[in-house]
Length: 248
Image (cartoon, rainbow, N blue to C red; front, side, top):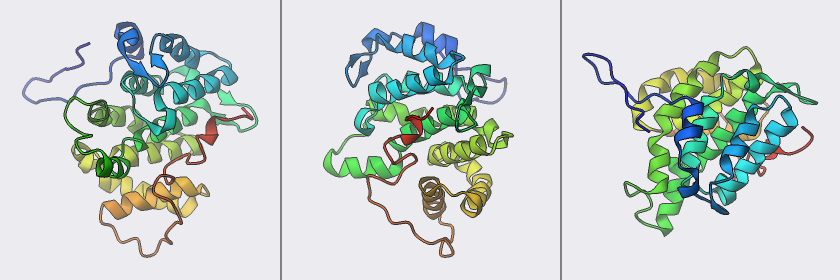
């Protein structure tokens, strides 16, 4: 697939391809997952567009196992993340989850945030201590990290979403993605949203992400109490992706 596009007189970053193109033009059988190749992924991804929220959330949970098992980035993680980002504005993403009264869109964002965190500067730094060269160009991790600006552009409009849970999920996802140097210009705006989240959210993993982003961007966080954490257990949905578990 060629995702490059350009404007006359000015270079333009690649756009996120339509989710239908990702689904149809990806050679899924050639891509590694946690349990073999990605031949079954098209069926799982298609279930994200089912009208039944139980089916949608179960599909996301399956994706977590296939392309995020043990917090690992696999070859198939890149096109899966592109597909998930591509359906954020699909009508099926507005399906409301029973018992929680939260649009599936928030859960899709949570999946993207959790996956992006597995490729974050913090986690990659820890891995590189034991496996130097982990970010060599052409590696699976490097390919996913290069995707972050494209994913960010899909997430950014949802920072204005009318639903509070969607907005918070979008903020967390955007904060993690904005580590990419090409997204530095967005950090001032995200700083305001991170501060608001810290003032209003009761979700400790999300508040932790917001505080750590401010700290990484050299903001004064002395007024924010530090969170108790372990290095491998401090990202969004750090309870084992519990947002994807029953009750649905």
